Image (tube, rainbow, N blue to C red; front, side):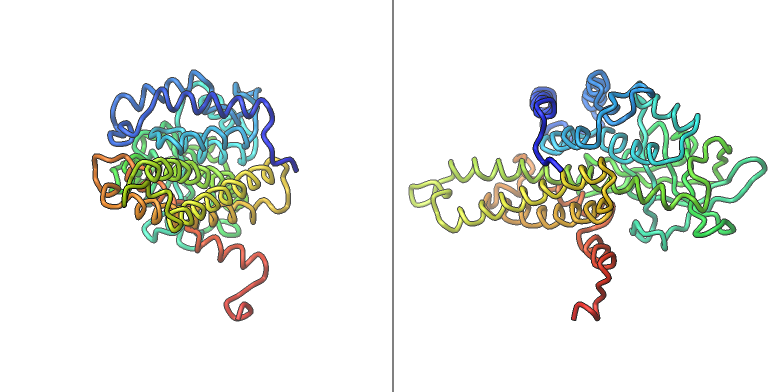
Amino acid sequence: MDLGFTDEQETLKQSARTFVEAETSPALARAPWDDGVDQVWQRMVELGWPAVAIPEIAGGAGMSLVESTILLEEIGRGIVPGPLFATAGLYVPALRSAPPGAMRDRMLADVASGATGTLAIAEDGGSWAWEELATTAKRSGTGWTLTGTKKSVVEGRSASEILVVARDPNGAGDGIGLFAVPGTAVSSEPMEALDPSLRLARVALESVEVSTNRVLAEPGAGSAVITRSLQESLVAASILIVGACGSILDRTIEYAKTRKQFDQPIGGFQAVKHKLTDMYVAVERARSLTYFAALTICEDDPRRETAASMAKAAAGDCQRLVVEDGLQLHGGIGYTWEYDLHVYLKRAASLEALLGSSRVHRKRIAARLGLTATSAG
């Protein structure tokens, strides 16, 4: 397994960074519903970013999760709002994990043409676990009727399509299925969030009718599809955190070079150097584990599920340390609305809870290793 970037991947990374620096700014994250966000999204569509990991036969670039991860890291560095994460990091992985079919292939092709989408899992309990799934899917004539409420749906108000995870109470096994619902068929409202640029929504499904051809995974067969797709989504969320934390680190280093106490830059003090070193190690550890997880998924390595949880746990640990120390080293100015640092702090902290916190994923890793609270002592 080669953990180094190819020349093509390095070129992609540099071009993405150039685009983000030229076309976006923290001001965009402060106004996430501004027309400028849509303009940036259209430029990304023109560049083919949403379709990077979509097969060429469906109009995509036919690249891998690694290339998609490279792009999302640069989006994270710039705190760029908009539908790229929801579409490329949540929606497309679920589509590609679903069984082949005319509807699935058409929806992938639509993304390549600029359509947006998202994935709706979490509910009132705030958990991403199957046990708390209350949204129901019941047979109705030749289709299904979905009823329930989803929370923390990224781009839930603007997505063209929403992939809804629901349960058939009378279905085989756990009864979990995956249903494609047009964004216009649901009722949605914005959710207050620490980071408003994530554009989270509460989505209500009030007896929404779904035709049979829009069932991407039949109830009872959906768990395997969702489990597999969420591994890619965990990589996407983790690399967004890494990108934001990388920017916090860069900004803190620059601040330490210019902020003076006792007539010398604070970066010259040993205690400050130690904190900056710890921040750097945390960012690099999380970045390495995230790209490792991406590679295990690309190669369908048996470790892919554990690697994805390790990446999310490491990213969560990283954001806690980097947010706390970055803010402390900036002092009071880091709290002010006028100073851009807090935009990055909010993004990193907000993504910690999405798709499960580091604590949740450490428990999952322990369970896969056969460890319990008792056996761990």
